[in-house]
Amino acid sequence: MSTPYDVLVVGGRVAGASTAMLLARAGARVALVERSAYGSDTVSTHGLMRAGVLQLSRWGLLDTLTAAGTPPIRETTFHYSDREDQRVTIRAKGGVDALYAPRRQVLDRILVDAAADAGADVRHRTAVTMVLRDDSGRVTGAHVQDRAGRTADLHARLTIGADGIRSVVASAVDAPVVLRGESRSAILYRYYAGLRTTGYEWAYAPGAGAGFLPTNEELTCVFVATTPVRMRALRRAGAEEAFVTLLTETGLAERVFSAEPTGRLHGWAGAAGFMRQSVGPGWALVGDAGYYKDPITTHGMTDGLRDAELLTDAILQGPEAVALTQYQATRDRLSRRFFDATESVASYAWSMDEVRLLLREVSSAMRDEVEHLRSLAIPYSVL
Ligand SMILES: Cc1cc2nc3c(=O)[nH]c(=O)nc-3n(C[C@H](O)[C@H](O)[C@H](O)COP(=O)(O)OP(=O)(O)OC[C@H]3O[C@@H](n4cnc5c(N)ncnc54)[C@H](O)[C@@H]3O)c2cc1C
Image (cartoon, rainbow, N blue to C red; front, side, top):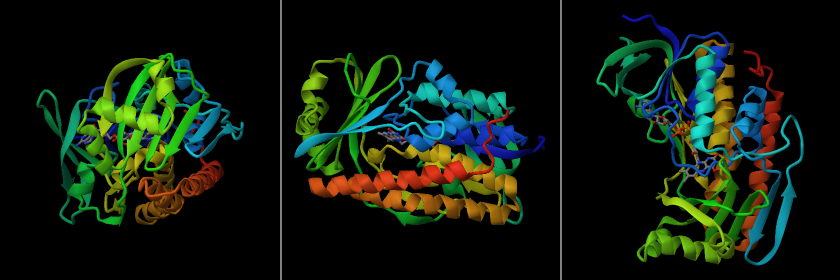
């Protein structure tokens, strides 16, 4: 049997790489396995909210993010089809004076590098194919296979599934879904050069949403969203036509047409939100593996960074069963209002007055989350 790790983390993006980094910084012996290649892209519109930026700042990674050319966002503009725009300046508070929308090749790589720098054994192009258990049923690690076909059993006291919404770890341990949503957004997005923005820009019209997120390489991510049923109907005329129709409805089309498209349209068909039981004997789930909500409120990465710290905090406090249960309780408490508001926004069944109220609820839930993170005793900023 190979030397056991303290923790095996499955999935090396926002949630997994941060969890591996934090645990390794705290002195744990950590393995991090990721199926895809180092520095690869994944589906995302990139927007980090204040809590996510706060985490990167506390972990000493914000300078690396800005040095990679990620533009600071100092203002958010809300466009509504029935009234004047609303502009909100990002206030400097608690080490955060701007928001950022990093490309995933940039952000995920920074987190993976930080995990490796902290001493984690990072293995890309390596997939977990099976979870290992002892005679009592407790998870004791995982069987992995790399792209060359080499296999190994990685033994660990705790196995953490950070492997996204179709988590192999969650299904291997039969983690029950404790809350299931119904709403889902279908999304199309593309990058544009030469698009002038005021920062994050969100646009709403009856049954549709859209937005601009300035990202690396002086590009802006432009997205449109609606229900899957409507998107399918619009796409019968073609994805480009659907994109243009939704941009036109939300009032953003002219500005997008004056910019230069870069690359293809990316699509997301939609998936219903859920919260899974995320702890059990020898295992835990973090990020989308344990809690997924519709991307329309652009909070999945921020939650992944938050929950990496909540889980690490719990693991370091032990004993395991009590601490992990506490992790899940805190995650759920901080997430529930946000989850419910996201469900309503992603229903697209609102009036314009109603969506404004929902977005206010989203903001208020975000403030609670930031306050909780600022109150955590262990900043993990020391390498
Ligand atoms: C269209 C769209 C737009 C979005 N826009 C935003 C946004 O603007 N802002 C925001 O905050 N969030 C956004 N999100 C949500 C965000 O992308 C996710 O919440 C976030 O990526 C979750 O991070 P994660 O680390 O939990 O999981 P993931 O990013 O899904 O990473 C999981 C990793 O696990 C790996 N993996 C899976 N199975 C295995 C296995 N068996 N063995 C080894 N590795 C495995 C995968 O290769 C993957 O790299 C968006 C999502 C979508 C779909």
